[in-house]
Length: 282
Image (tube, rainbow, N blue to C red; front, side):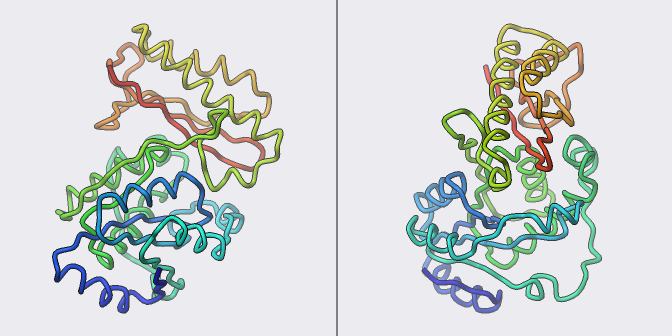
């Protein structure tokens, strides 16, 4: 496994693969890797000759400076996990390599970037669009892999690829969970044991909402069901619960629900903010 800190050297290394017709896959991460990330790496390896994983904690997508400071880091462990999983190349740049000067380009994703996460984290998706565009330009992958846990982010990136005509296939991978249903997240490392137990109620609530969707309940019925289950956990404070179209990511109206829906949720537990979703298809 090779580790590059400079975009120039990474591009040079990848050129020889492209010149021989080999496909390159990219898995963008912010490090602090878990089984969900490794699942992305494995999928990438199965579909490409070369697997590239980027590790960079991108400051422009954090609207809360305290959250940025507390984001867990362990590069030595990350590199060990990536080598064991069969990753070929790691791009681990310094801040000055990615942002030699403060960026002035802005991304506006319209309503898609203003709802749910966009509403509660202003500027977040501008930062996501900026760093993903940079990585796409540096790596020029054939395919890029993202987890469905960040479902709105996945929709944003797909729109980015469409609008900017990137010749990149975007592949979403289903959320990987603990045995108790808690979605794997780097932020889980900041939870206490008791908080982790209570956070598992999130998935229980989503499953209850799924049952309501399949029983042809309204959006209001689904959201009320999710809220009722969340109340079992005294430490959970919901920020939003919404039903969206899983493909267009449009918010479904209160008196209307599609046979296909994604129930999206964000909660705070202590100082940690968690997001999750469950996609329901007929």
